[in-house]
Length: 199
Image (cartoon, rainbow, N blue to C red):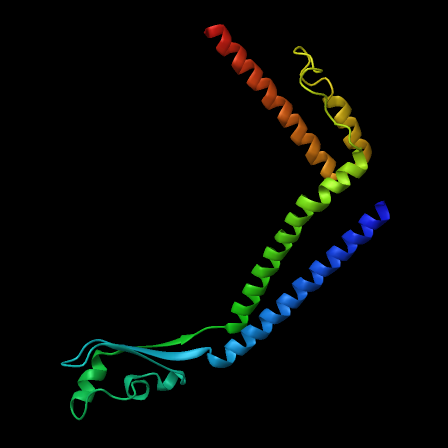
């Protein structure tokens, strides 16, 4: 039975890993196709309203030396002597971006998101199965009735000894969680006792 679970878990892990890899490759292909449609450099001219012409924003993929109103604004909305006055009002800026950096950042972000998703799947599906197999169906701690009021941490020492013998990070975290739960229960008891005494 345990080998079936182990084999199933290995298959689940490999399927999730392959699907994550396929998703990354698909995303990279999509980003490459998008990069063909957009350039990394452009000249952007913002022209305010002039006489009867409304304001407009012009973009063109040209070199930095040609980044001016005469090369970017097409079609020119004014004619003749008004061209110079119109172009003096326009503000042109040369802009660069690195699409490679953007792609790498997105891939890193999605990889981290995928790892967190796999960890969530592990915590919800795999960890309970491993706990049941390691500890059986017994509880690590006794119920509140078994623990005396004078010794709230009576079995905490046993849990600590077990966690040291296993030397597993998961068990250490579990021990800290159990100890915290016991402390919270003791605080609740003392708060309710004080409330009863004050009432």
